[in-house]
Length: 283
Image (cartoon, rainbow, N blue to C red; front, side):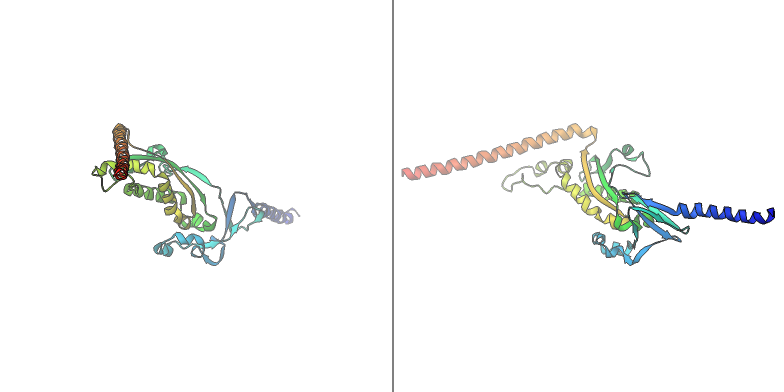
C-alpha cells in the first residue's frame, strides 16, 4: 500500500510545485509610472504589421535613418492588474517618468568628464571650455521595442549622440548679432564681434533649443524622448579667465565709446538742422 501511495504523493507534490511556480507566480501588476511589454517564446507581442515609420516620431528621421531604424509596434501593458503570463512568456517593465541627468555623466566611465561634473569642448577660436548643465528625458511609450530590444544600453547611446552634437555645435557656433557693426564706421570688426565664449554665453537659449531639435530623432532611434536640454554654464580654463575679463572690459569700453559717439553725432546733426532753420527764418 505504501508503494502505491508513493507515486500519488510525488504527483501531488509536483502539481503543488507547478501551481506555485507557474500559476500563482504568473500573476503580475504594473505600477502607475510603469509600462510593460510581453514576449512569447522570445518574440515581443506586436500590433499587427505596424512599425515606427507609421508613428509621428518617424518625422524626425532623415531618409537614410528611416531605412535603418524600423522597429515593430508592440502591445503595451498599461498600469493596473493583476495580469497573467504563461511559463513561456516573459514580461519587461520600465519606468516612464521623466528623469534628470548631468549632461557630463558618462555611464560607462564614471571618472570621465571630471567625474561627471563638467563636459569639455573646444570653440571655433580653439578655446577649451567647460560645459555644465542637465538633460531631462524619459522612456518613449511609443517606441518601447527600440528601448528593450533595439540597442543594449539606450541611455548610453543617447548620451553619446547628445555629446557629439553639442560639441559640434560649440565648435562651429557664430553669433548672428551684428547690431554693433556699422558700415560707415571704420573700426576693428574682430574686436567688436568679441570672442566665441561670449557669443555662446549670450545665446544659451538658442543652443538649448538647437539641441532639443537635433535630438528629437532619439525617440525613433533609441526609444528615449528628450524633454529638455538645460545648459547652464560655459566656463573658460582658469588660466585664461583674467585675459578673457580684460577682453570683455575692452569690448565693453569700445561699445560704450561707439554708442556715445553716435549719440553725439546725432545731436550735432539735429543742432545743425535747427541752426539752418533759424537762419532761414531770419533771412
